[in-house]
Length: 372
Image (cartoon, rainbow, N blue to C red; front, side, top):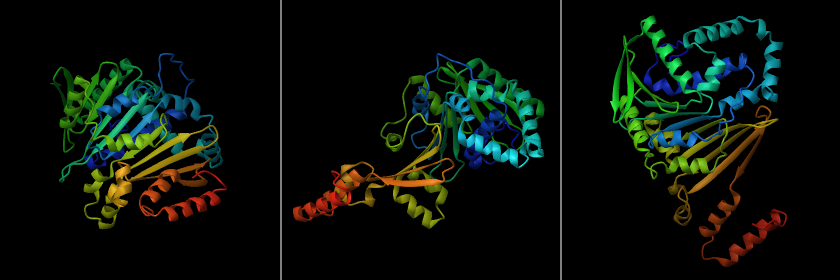
């Protein structure tokens, strides 16, 4: 729940950013006190992310996924980027700085509230799969956020949630917790004092944790969870298509449903015009043994290319880029050349065999004889 770091109450429209910041802070704090990795032969890395995505709202404007956090912590300390940052911080006196002491003090306070270490929080609660989704209302109103977590250790998950609620009650911010149900599944609504809006959460069998600032959204997810029914597959095409063009089982991925982002930029004509050209944008971050890679893909709206090309692919066009380097120092871009070439032949050169043959010969020469 987003106030675990004693963050001052934020408007709901900032909830997505607050949750992302929270996850990053937990990872940093956990890395500072990282313990030896715990072997879990029953783990199946990446097995839960599809289940969580199936529960996400089909009309989400943005979806962030974090996979296999426990594995990333195990490998992170040995990564060249982590070592380089550690050396830089040490050279700047970080280890003896007030900032370091403040961070460690925050870590100790959080661990005291939760009754477990942040390393355990990262591994045993957030360690398998996490999905954060943002839904924007079409006509004003507050955005709805949804946090889904598949916890490796359901016992520690329940204990941490109970400890957090108990601490907020003692602190005076939490007024009461009301138990409710949606079908056969129970959930709780947390009501706060002052102007802070209520939120709702549920802990299901198997360590599945759900939280939202919208009770209606949580109820919708619980209904689908109870019936094992995924969101409308047709409505989820934007996400399915982006995931198909990005590497899987990566630490962090971000998917943007650009048409659903329109309410955020209704007063910005330039940005609104840009959004209209896209069906979706996806990014994936991957840590290799000696590099960091950022993959990005854009799906152009079908209307952005001539009709024959648009009809041959549901998303009209695909642009992909890959950044690679120890700290993204080296950048390289790529386009799906075979697909773009085929669309060129189907549109601009349709009905002109001689020009088609000429371009084929020219491209073959430019590519050193490669078959285009």
